[in-house]
Image (cartoon, rainbow, N blue to C red; front, side, top):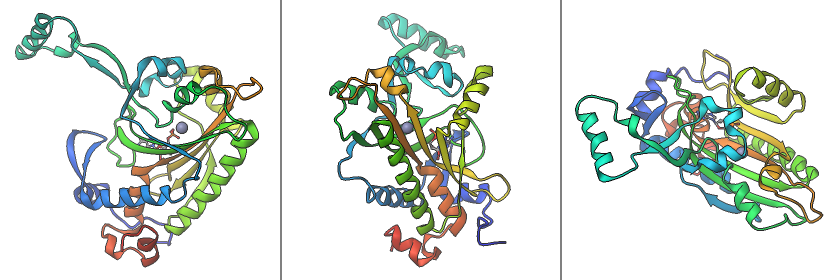
Length: 304
Ligand code: AMP
Ligand code: ZN
């Protein structure tokens, strides 16, 4: 074993120690042992928050219309989960309940509640930013977080359907976004080093849907629009993307008519921390007992 190998904790051992099954792959109850580390990670990230950042904590759902408007359905329809409910009169609802009693699928009678499960923490922030009129010269910075959902069922503990994402978002001129992303890649590097997590950076692409998606992904890589910080969380497979550094160009500016003082479309970028993957990486790398983690790691996380 080299120092860069995760401690040999199988998924089953980690599952037994840190989670409780909830009957569906990729959806777990989290234990106190795990949540204490999640809280510590969130606090560590907060200590790096730029002073000017506006903070929002979003619920796990967002407007279906807003997500449609930004083109999510063309790019990632396979990942999306939407909220349905029983509408109509009391008799309509009772009829659905009765169908369930007869062993039929009651959800056939359910229709959209106008909500989706948020697939990323930053999506709701752009329309909020646009409400305030033109972006100021110095740009805008946000600290956002949400419980996210992506329909990618898997038994791997680093690929969840429901997971937590924390993001810093920057809206402004192209140069401001580029500087922001560079700064955050440096900060992320120092955070990973201080946590003694081995990592590499790589260009990356999002899992765009379908044949056109292949082109979009290639384009994203070619234009270096997405970088990821990858950590070898699992001993037997490729390293896992635990943070991403994204440049959206004018995509959200165009969608939400976000403009600068001169009326030019604003650009945006975000840095996303996969909180559950980072927590898992810590346990995989340093072992299941936090008290036995390297002292400096415990200190950085203020766990002792
Ligand atoms: P992305 O928007 O795909 O760049 O995702 C941002 C971060 O969320 C990634 O770097 C991961 O750390 C985390 N993430 C994405 N998908 C999952 C998943 N299925 N399970 C756990 N964490 C995830
Ligand atoms: Zn984002």
